[in-house]
Image 1 (cartoon, rainbow, N blue to C red):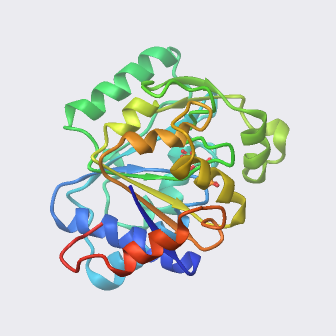
Image 2 (image 1 turned 90 degrees about the vertical axis):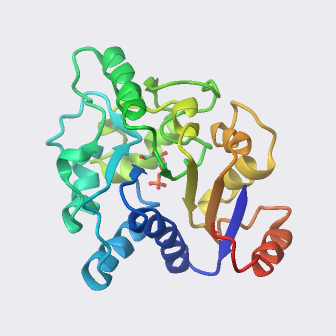
Length: 259
Ligand code: F6R
């Protein structure tokens, strides 16, 4: 696991965009896309590079992490809509090749199983962007989630519903249940890139990176993955015991070594 501490949120965005750009420029690639506020700056930076620097997504395809159960795709807060308005509409990624879970499926369990099969059928995700919840969730795998879970229905924690009330009219409008890639599904991706900024994420980042491997902090499952890059600003790094070591390691990173 490599911890990259950047001075500002803008530098977090550009570092995460550098990583995605490397995959996209290497040819046909399968991206794993997160929603929520954390990757928005990265998506804007990628869209800028598409406009100004010829970054071409035409050969790429993408899978989303999660979706609210019961929310129609036409709802602006469905992740189906959010990923389009925040990213896909601004680049040349084919919207028909951006796969998301159907929150209105009449058979959510079959929908979840089919999603895992679809990811497997294309050979898996090359690079997976992740945000982290204040309670340590990734995707919508709330504390207590099996570390080997597959895509399935989960019930949101009250804390997550409160955190996400800002996207809705109020907390009462936040759905109670979701479809989410499981922790095992997420960890099948070949490279995990976590993005977090702000002091509100500091405790979750410290638990994920330096705490015990535990279902109590689902993001700690990243400790088992062979290729993880955690890109955070100084505020999100505030509770890391080994922050000085991470800065030192980054400063002395061999020039030939990419993230
Ligand atoms: C969203 C997702 C979630 C968010 C997390 C953080 O697709 O998978 O895990 O990444 O809830 O949300 P923000 O970035 O809004 O703080």
